[in-house]
Length: 233
Image 1 (cartoon, rainbow, N blue to C red):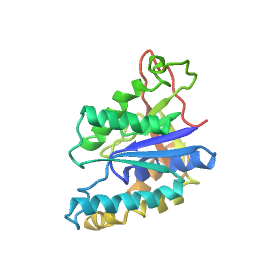
Image 2: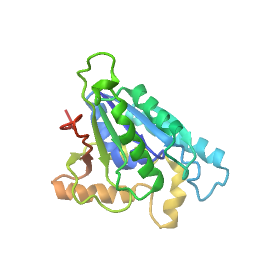
Image 3: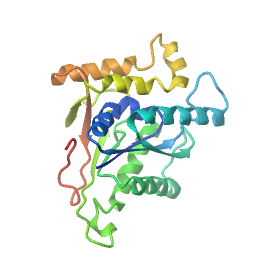
Image 4: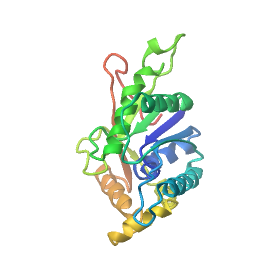
């Protein structure tokens, strides 16, 4: 299968769905990553937005090697992502590029503007995929596309519909997030280490579900087009 993760910023993938992507990769599936922005304002050390974006893209490509993933950067401005014809077309093109069986993206409950908008754009454009809307295809399509949203950045999804045991994948997930070196200065402000908050939260979810580490998701259903969904095969 083709697995697509659509995030707003380069490190969003590692934090939220990294372990699950690694599990899919172990099973032989293909991983695709699309980012609506390059996180070009995401630094408390650098001020040049062009340099920040280039730096974070390089970090993402390095992290993506752990998943053996193909990456596409849509390069909208960080903190200025809007719902326009251009951004909708970008997201749809990225989804067609990946030809996904399963899509992961941000929660519609996420309070971060770029995260929420990315989720909105993905959910708005999935109806243009043949695997969800048969009218979007010129020929019969027996492919079914499932859409999952990961947990909000701020706060906890109290009722996740599915969990994935990432105990065996967590070390590689942790190694992937360490490639985002430009973000380490942010964690220094809080007296923490990059990835430690991720470790704590994944361990919390693991405790709930009887494993060491877990990631949680909710399915996005579209009435009349997608009556059910699947996570791991």
